Length: 271
Image (cartoon, rainbow, N blue to C red):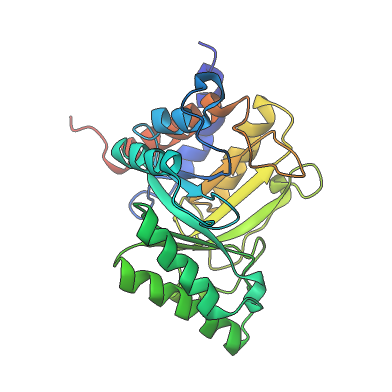
């Protein structure tokens, strides 16, 4: 009963959703917290694992602002367990807006794949303009990942609007990453290339949401304008990604409800 009201928030949106092209929306979670297996109450990875069979879920693995100096068994267990539950895991690599040497970036990609079972790479601090040198840099990043693991998920994070040309290098672009209190997703207009309905190629992350009701309203808006990957949290700076939100379960249930209704529209029952 507690979450029944969330379903109502999505009904009008679902009626208007495009039928065939839409794909299920998912959670893109910056899992920048240590998997403390001996502290059951503090292990957010357990909650990710529990949610993975219910909604599409991708966790961004980030041991030390990158793969770090060594392979960490607790992260091995986290990645393996989440993938076994139906989720996906991608490794965090920062690029400093192409200022980081490309070979250094690619070496971190290789290190991740040598240590952990992964489904792709999340490239942080990326450009979003049309400079040819920038596009070539990220094309090299994407091609390197695909050579290691064909079909891998490659996410680029400009954190703001980006040109569609970057999809030559990536499966998904993170187009909004901000404090909900200062730059509201409720007012966000995505680039023209983002199709209404969960198209899968645009992602949004927002933090500092006040409560469950705010989460539901922002989630509805993000889904309605075309976000295919979403994560909303009540966490705040300096690191808004070091916990899961108090409304985590409500967010999972709301997204599962949206996807279920979307599936019913695509495949209506036969009479």
